[in-house]
Length: 200
Image (spheres, rainbow, N blue to C red):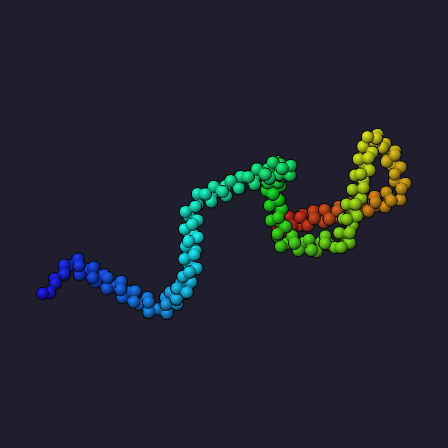
């Protein structure tokens, strides 16, 4: 006695046959076979990882709570120390400095500026040596000024008398040379700007 299938049953069997054929095709694909072999070879590792993940989710509330508690304790320990308090107090000022430094860094990153710095002699070892000596001179002069802070400031005549010191005259001459070169640079820049204006 033959069994008559309803249209819905026939559709289900047809759909199952299609899925079975797709599965057979995939199992015949060498990449699929290689992936399955790799998975089977590492089945123990996968099972272990699943256990770890399952354990994490099973205890996730406790883990998150412990992490949060540790974080708050660390923050409290840092902020309650003298160094931490100073760092927290300096935070807004540091953010302001960082905000102001961004345009400077963008300007420094400009290739033209880097080329100008390279050709200006700013990295010349002799200039760096001079800047080191200048910093030392400023430091020593500051110490002397602080030591004499309670004394009456020198009069104009006393200041003019300081020019009798050869070192003072040598320093003044050097400073005046710098001022002269700065003035010459400003004049040349002004002339170049005026020329560009006339050409425009």
